[in-house]
Length: 146
Image (cartoon, rainbow, N blue to C red; front, side):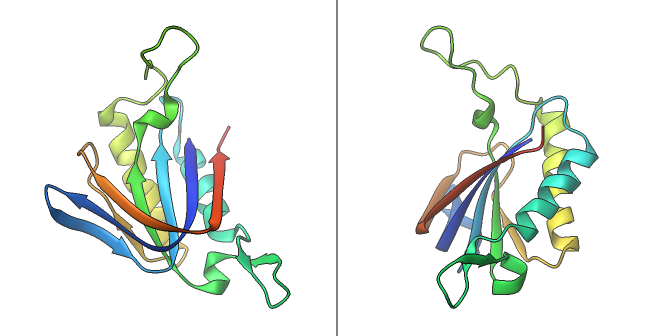
């Protein structure tokens, strides 16, 4: 599992002209699932997202988690995180999980975040999405479960 975390001041996902998810301050999560991911990977990464200290304290140090600081999650499925680009010019996505595997795991990931006390908005799995965000910092972190 691979997740790109972008700390944001505001973000939204639009599909076919309709907003499917929107947050004010929080994280935009671009979520990639590979074919070997399990529920243990999902739980590990969800806990890591919730507890990572990416928000500044009064001294300007990144010392607070999103749970302590406050904020919401906008979760967007993104199989292209598993693009293989070593050969040729067209990426291969063979390492990305098939939709019938990835979608339930992505949904489990979102539920795991909710169970940790976070409000989670989402895009639509498999849809062409317009993702808009104001990156805060910018702070961008890549997490991998393996």
